[in-house]
Image (tube, rainbow, N blue to C red; front, side):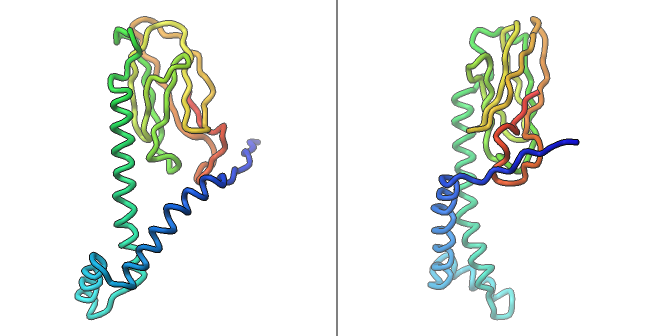
Length: 191
């Protein structure tokens, strides 16, 4: 019989940040629809043209809001990706000859889909792995300790013995029921 850990509620800080971003953008979309200012006025004209003189305010608000939110999310993803590449461009431990590697495959899950997980080797960050991605890190041989973190989430450290010229395959993801916005702190795994 398996037991599931209790679900954690979002922190007050997370709720505040979401409200400070979502509420004003929804308000702006509503105001733009009521005031019929550009580009909403063009959207209303297109809807009226396509639907026999009618337009749908709720649909207009939704499309307007999505047009404000999606570019911001895409820019955030692009900036995060370029920072990760600049920080960890070669995916290699300093002094590694490239013959010994660790390959980590991360599952693609709804939670943290747009956030990269940090990978640590012997306490030093060696790179990041995006959702649904596989990364290979060149490392020096020997007995090594590997773990992953994402904010407050941290996997258990895994000790691996790497022979010269060898490759270690590892899987990373979140275990259990994590469809909510705030999975249990101990749900990040690396094995």
